[in-house]
Image (tube, rainbow, N blue to C red; front, side, top):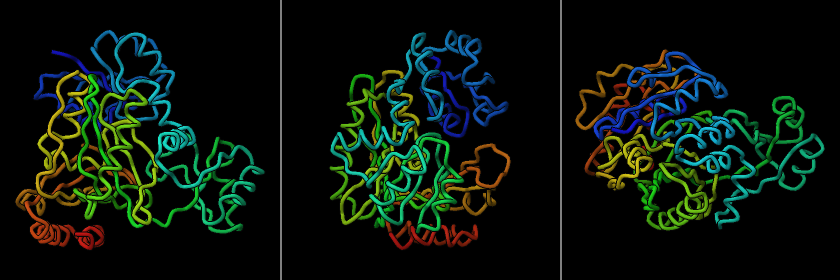
Length: 374
């Protein structure tokens, strides 16, 4: 029986451990917050990412290490890789931690992106805005996620405010994209180079946080081949092992690269019940060197994210092919605390099920864009 060490103890680590248990895998989690929610299903070491004495003990107790959180310091990943196998590798982790490096790689590998310029000073910002124009988005190159570390600049009046909010860190200015929709592709690559993707899905966000996902994305037949080609090229270039997500904009029928998440991803949560083999189980399979599982969609699926606090589960649990996930977290504004997944054999059945559940939860606004897309 192999033990997988997970750096990061959030809900993603929790779901990895739950998916890996039937395969006979054991887990050990490291997190710098005591009683991380993954510790409810796996033992935890509470330590800082640079507490190398604790990490030395961690390395001795596991067979392979992985991540549920891309902001673990890359030098910690390199240090760990000298002692135990680490998947994905530290190079892949470091690449995705810097938006400038990541987007430069996308372009080098043939995936177009919104226009972008590095910003290291206020003068750089002024010059970048002349080049890119308005509106634009100023972002930290590192540590941003779920809409954090970003400021939309709509006009010259916003420049001073944006600089006051983010200046002092390494930044990137990106052109604002009036996209038709946001999609993502969850993919997995094994230790032997085997590669597979789940269907392209459509996503909706509220204040930078994922609100809902529809699988498969409507009318995505013409995009899935290109998305798969781009994901495979990135994975092979980085010698990536494990599950990852490629987040994309659709503009004028073409794909633009937004970012890559080097881990299991929120937009793949539907796979737990909506695919023969979930993104979490496939991640475990990949890092252990096992054959990858089936990534097809079983009909259609919708995932509704719950932010801040959980609604009452009763109406969801009473619905056929509806599934409830409570992450075991205390309520807090902006915090991902759970999700529900609805599955159906047909689009018509899904539409009826989603209307019923959304009304019961008082979440008609959250479901409305998904219903419009179905």
